[in-house]
Length: 415
View 1: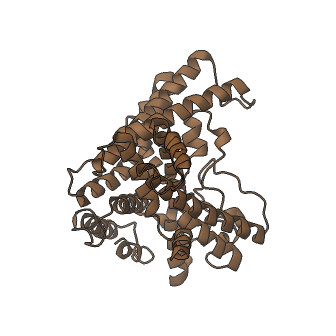
View 2 (view 1 turned 180 degrees about the vertical axis):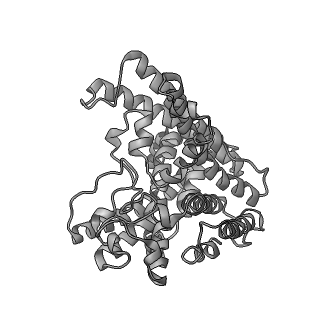
View 3 (view 1 turned 90 degrees about the vertical axis):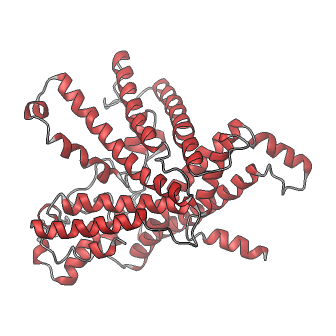
């Protein structure tokens, strides 16, 4: 649905109001069709519509960031060579590929807008990178497949297990509140990881292994990990800023400065503590609320497809309260004199307490603030309780991850 907009990018002078109005009208038309046209009759799974609508909202935000709010030829350029390139000097096909690369990259690697804090790539040769990426790809799909299988068995209380003692042990371990929560946290993490890996891993293997695509993409250093080290997640701020993926960092962070630029200059430039703190957390909240809007688009579509009352499924509250938790954490750290920005490594006690608080908050917010509202919004069966309904959401999300050759292979062997 987005392709008609995209094909206009290389040829239209986006610095004119006429061109921008034309492109914006095209985008609005296709967005309305996407969210309000009758869904395909053969696709009733709410998980499919949830993820595809989030992806569409992601693309829409990219268009606003890279095209409507900027003149891309003037503000974006690839780094390297003899200096900043001039996109207007490129031929038609070169400009087309330039536009394609600008729109598809998410972290600005190789461009003048590379995000800060991207995880470092390991020094690997070409084939070491390919082997490691292949292993990640297979492992990812194994994890997704197991998430779906384990989730279904938990909901069915492992009825397919013939050994009664083993079945009783599995039920005791997994079919309770703690077991449900552990499955939701681990299973949702595996699924989120796969949402980026299903594209990034095979494309990186093709680019690096077979030297296809833009030249910059053929270097293993162009493909750093999507997630940072879990060791760095000893605070809520570090969880989101260092550990969690940065695939939407650019599109969720651009509205904040834009809104801030409309405030009085005295507020924008004041060095006083109150204005500085207000600006800092205003940017944090706007970033999280933008992410909430993108995810709410998925929930709204999923509920519409299921012929249920349209709702954002708790997404706005979930992301809003992430900013609140971060602000409260910063306040507590300031009161007790803890400053993680200091270069000296944090103590073991600081890390341990931080891990426990971050894990506790993430578990509560992911299950209670996001999981349960999402399950109820999508009409999952809650007759056995709300937590089993959340297990159902996670299992269903894993089952619809596309391209799972591991599942196809296992099921093929059963025939």
